Amino acid sequence: MRNTIILTVADIALRTLSLNPATSPPRHLLQRHYTRKHGPDAYYGNPTLKPAG
Image 1 (cartoon, rainbow, N blue to C red):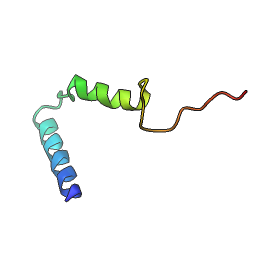
Image 2 (image 1 turned 120 degrees about the horizontal axis):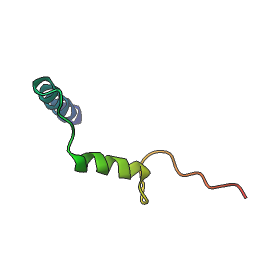
Image 3 (image 1 turned 45 degrees about the vertical axis):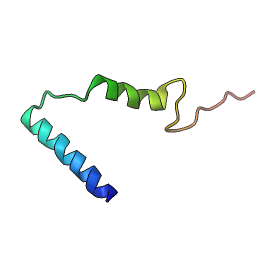
Image 4 (image 1 turned 90 degrees about the horizontal axis):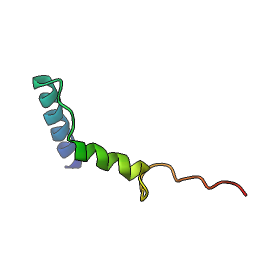
């Protein structure tokens, strides 16, 4: 079921880009994905390395 949802969303994105190649994701979505990895309360990706000492 999850794969079906993901494939449907990907299909919608592909169709959107085929209709208008200049389309970009909404700004709030880009910001959300950036801050979840690089923001002050990051929770995705590699853990921050603590300096030795």
